[in-house]
Image (tube, rainbow, N blue to C red):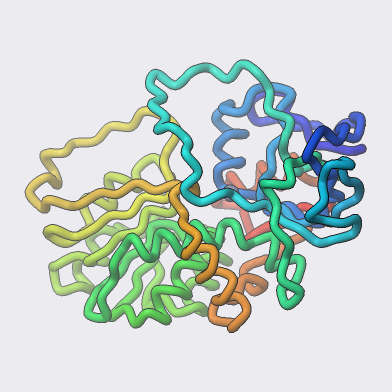
Amino acid sequence: MKAAVIKKKGYMAVEDIPIPAVGPKQVLIKVKYCGICGTDLHNFAFGISAPDSIMGHEWVGFIAELCRDVKDFSEGERVMLYKHPGSPTPPLRIYPRPVPSSPRRSGTYAEYIAVSQSRIIRVPDELSDKQAATLEPLVAAIHAVRLGNMKTSNDVAFLGAGPIGLMMIQRVKQAGARSIYVSEPVKVRAAKASELGADQVFNPFEEDVVTEIIKLTNGKGPDIVYECAAAKNTLNQACQLVKRNGRIICLAVYQEPITLTPLDWYQMQPEIKFTTNGDSTPLDWEISVEAMLKGLIDVETIISTIIPLNKIQETFQTLLDPLNNKMLRVLVEP
Ligand SMILES: [Zn+2]
């Protein structure tokens, strides 16, 4: 089968490798779509995935083969990844961050994946393949919106309007935010943020986002700032921007050391909460499926591009280049 294999930091090659063998309690999936996740982009760009790894986890596919001991599924069923909410993963303390050593080949930038039956769920018939391939990041988005504890009197800012930010903007708009301000350098993403309900969108390469948004909130600053960018300066911007005693929710984190001057913002006493999609709960999954089924969150509108596997290297490079990127969410169709 074809798979995109990491060869070194910033470089993947599509290779012919054996279809994975199906072990006990496993099923073999023929991958239909796999979404490109921001985490994959960072792991690629910063050399966090070891050479020989295969990334990709936002997938939907069809069962091609089952181990004899799998009784709950049958061949041909449409399934997707299910991350067990609240699974007892021990808290990871990773400093200093270890240099990646052993490759992880369990990703779906590949035609097939063998996966434990406990890690898949059937896709509801009403969901399209594209929606199903976007459910996992939507769960992270919904969870983060809930962490914000937004009130209808709140001004909300998003640093970054990538796929996750664009889903969150829809949710925050529905929840009745007083205003939504967005910082996003990629033009198509900025335009989509406006279309989906942002009151004003700023280009952080051309404007002083912090000053402008504070001005628009009458000098107060937004009640909630969602850090969805993971650029070098966005955590600092969030701290400078948020109102006194406001809340910063970080879904995206920069991967290398940065310089912060806490003296600049400590008097504002922000509450900073980091979150990963591992924090999501069964309720987040339920809300996400319902939001898609009811048409409350349009994920197809944020899927701009579907690529074959052999375009993955150039697509990753473009997605990492905000001055040249013209894509929203990208699905790989291996
Ligand atoms: Zn992801």
